[in-house]
Amino acid sequence: MALRSRRDPWLLVKRVVKEADVVVEVVDARDPMATRSRELEALVERLGKRLVIVINKADLVPREVLEEWKEVLSREYPTIYLSARERLGTRWLWRIIKQVVDKRPVTIAVVGLPNVGKSTILNVLKGRHSASTSPIPGWTRVHMKARAATWLRVVDTPGVVPRGSEDELAIRGALRPEALSDPIPTAVKLINMLRRKDPGVFERCYGISGDDPLSLLESLARRRGLLLKGGELNVEEAARILIRDWQTGRIVVYFTPEDYGLKPSRSLMKGSAPRGSSGNSSSTSLSAPSRPPRS
Ligand SMILES: Nc1nc2c(ncn2[C@@H]2O[C@H](COP(=O)(O)OP(=O)(O)OP(=O)(O)O)[C@@H](O)[C@H]2O)c(=O)[nH]1
Ligand SMILES: [Mg+2]
View 1: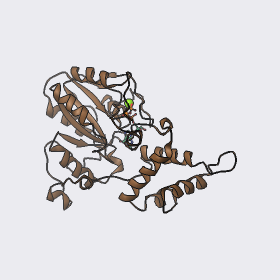
View 2: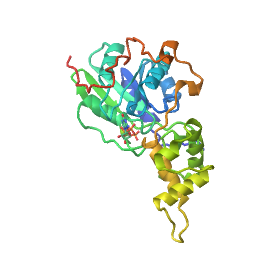
View 3: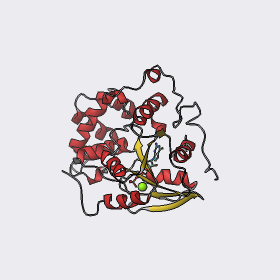
């Protein structure tokens, strides 16, 4: 089912992009490929704007994998990684904005799928809490402007919902589990996907094991004491919990460029970071919180 409606944020995002000098596309470090929007990128290019990819939630993924993603995505657009919530590596954001545009003042539009951390990034740039953030996808409904520095204006936007089935959207974090008509098939797909990547993930995360996805959901329901009125296991609620835990990063599984058949350069595969000009390749890249520079 294609999820598009007249309340679609696309129109608003288009307006905001038109007014921007630089567009920051935020993606989730656990699966940058699945959480980028080619449609959005095409729109930005059509409107002749510069695009920068920010891989957010870097706290959930090992640095080597972040470096690999940065290298692979940089072949298309300038790319950095950071953790907006933990305020790590955020100085790279200032740096890359300055690198791609020397006009003053600069207006940047923060765009991306729901729940990737756009509002949290606006708050980083602003230096204090301005935009409301939430683990619920689709939280930001209107665009919000903030002056981050004398030379920088930032516009937050609602997440754009990609085309796709309910399952895909929920797995990409763009649709909250409560909005699913039946969360069980989605949870089954998610379980299969996560187990293929990391067979021990549910043992580690919940202390449960099971051969097939449904018995895994039953084990989770049993463990959490999720019962329906007649004493039956509430498997639906277990499915929602699992999807929510995936969306909020409680279940940590991450994907690498190799999972998409993309090869990072050999120096990265050996584990050494490259000396790039627009990236966070230094060993301190995820360490220091940043202050907005004056200019
Ligand atoms: N682990 C981790 N979580 C983060 C990070 N940045 C944001 N989050 C969390 O991700 C969730 C979504 O963040 P928001 O900033 O509201 O995301 P958004 O892209 O504005 O979402 P919508 O407004 O729904 O489109 C919140 O629970 C944040 O705390 C990060 O760097 N690391
Ligand atoms: Mg938001």
